[in-house]
Picture 1 (tube, helix red, strand yellow):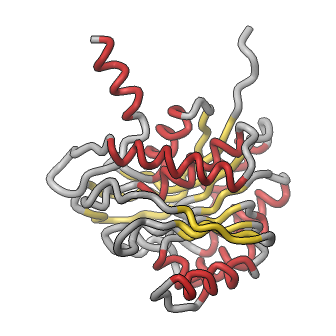
Picture 2 (spheres, rainbow, N blue to C red; picture 1 turned 120 degrees about the horizontal axis):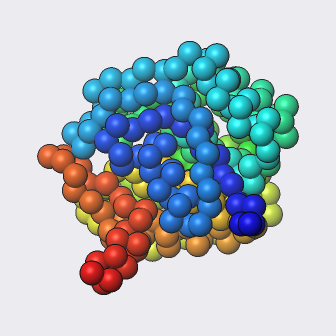
Amino acid sequence: MSDKSVVALTIAGSDSGGGAGIQADLKTFSALGVFGKTVITSITSQNTLGVQAVDDLPVGVVESQLKSILEDDKCQAVKTGMLGNEEIVEKVASLLKRYRAKKLVVDPVIFSSSGKKLLTVSGVEVLKNRLLPLAQLVTPNIKEAEILSGIKIRGLADRKRAARAILKTGVRAVVLTGGHLKGKPEDLFMDHSGMEILSSERLSNSDPHGTGCVFSSAIAAELALGGQTLMAVKAEKEFVGRAILGEVISGKGKASVEPLSALHQEWEKAR
């Protein structure tokens, strides 16, 4: 009989184009040896050219899915992505608190990479006030960090101020991702014991779709496996780098990162 699997849960939207959202999260969990479970919050109609439509699920449907998972057994880590609106954020936060979910990673998805709004203004406030205090880590990009902190980010000093402001919500750590910066994509990690800049080379000029989803779900997988927060962030920054190098062009528009690229390479060698 097999040993019990390490399990991570993703609570996020569905990306019909396969490059981000639930689809990318599940591929990431599998690539890292973690069994993935899902709660879908929204159905997006999108492809490599952008997001054409967004349909948030009724909050009762989200609640039913999440209760179903949490009443079965505890997941070793939870990642949230696109939550859509304030009712869904409130319900997700309430249930995660009630069931004492551990190792929560929040990817504060507010806009799609093509600019489509994916979380209401009220939803942002509920996320700050109700969900972040439960979280071990939040992973905003520059634009998301500006919205969460209320600070306009131009340089490193602004990023530090924004990270400190986000920590005041009650989240235990923040990694402000630097993929949208000019030059090297430096990530800024900060918790209540200090700060560290995580630098790397820019691996692609195409700004591939799905990097934020893959990064946050990879960290959740590493935490589920017992990793510590900063070490998980560092390890999964490297993992995202490999996924970027294995990016896939699946349509007429933007390329997508491929979390399973290493496995694809093994298959190619075995042929």
